[in-house]
Amino acid sequence: ADYYQLGFNLRSNIFQGGPLESRSLMKDSYTPDVIEKAIRDPKNWHGRRTDDLGRWHQKNALNLNLQKAFEEKYG
Image: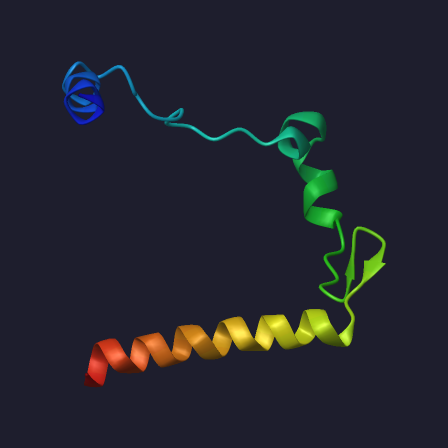
């Protein structure tokens, strides 16, 4: 019964999804020149330094994406 109810709701377009245009609190709060002048340091993220574990996770994610791309391309 839940399956048919979900199908009815999807056909009725009750779940319309998110907004088509995304909003950013930072872009709404500051003028464009402030955002352009902002220094983006990936090693110092919101006052928190990236440690070895964070760098390992970043490299691991890149490695997994690379393996997935190789498998898609070469089988």
